[in-house]
Length: 415
Ligand SMILES: [Zn+2]
Image (cartoon, rainbow, N blue to C red; front, top):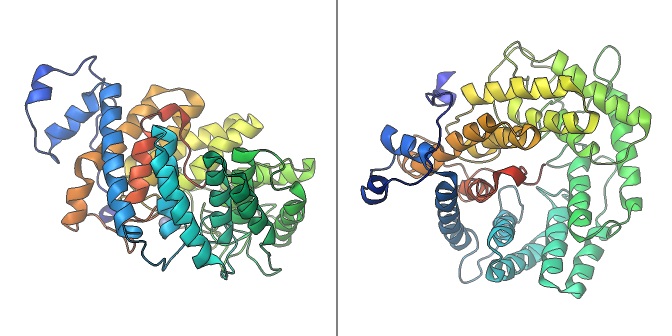
């Protein structure tokens, strides 16, 4: 089991220094040593924040070249999850942090190429489908002040057809379509896409959940390729997370709440969660996609929505699992250290407790200090799509940008 993650040898807490010491400025320390990591942890936050920003912007340049190219490469995979749209999403984030309009312009170009590449796609979600292209396209157009382009992408979004046999999960199903709707309306304005486009989708999702739920089980349950998953990517946590963003009927909301309570009640004694209903014994995975991290983010949201202490306590327990077993041998968002860091950021946002900021900083500094070397030597998986947002270093760059304003972070395309 131990080969899935690095043992966490971080102290419980390390105070930051008030100023950067002279010797720290002038004595270069080689990266990837215990000394360099503890120096980072004691660095005053405003200085550390600049380091994160610089690293993120350097990574961004590499990622744009590698995934899209200076000469406008073909787009073999348009998706936000592992493809070119993920680069556009990173550029949009960089624009939000630096206000560099050049990033916005390149982002818009990339979305345009993804628009062509996804025109015949049957996938409908934000992360893996056409809705992601249309939603990001409309929002970027809005920030560029191009109303015609906003209209174009919003119209394209309205053209998306959801088939009856669509699954309900976040990556390929209804929840992922609903997330794209939320993204557009939040950035451009309520009603940009009218709720008539989502009402039936929400009803269908609840109805499907009830069909498989009940009978001494969770009130809502879903299936994806024959497995009843619990995690954020394919299961309950992702679907409940999105449903909580909508104004639900009281009994629908009650079922969402009771579904989450069912999960908390049936978690592992460690505070971690099984990957699926059928696999309750293997306390192995501590990923955003499967296990405590993705579920913790949903529990933080549930604590906000329901004001229920039980959800906050469960999120705190899940964060403890992430702290102990979440320093994964992968850098990305989906099943890597970057994604797991968001658990601490989310709890920091909710509670204001600086110990969670410290934990986020510890994980992010670990990446800043040694991810490049560990990936280069093969000690850390680079992933099949090494520059992608969800499995590659674009996710790490996104996290570094978020670390410059840790009170206002959101797990990309989820929170
Ligand atoms: Zn994953």
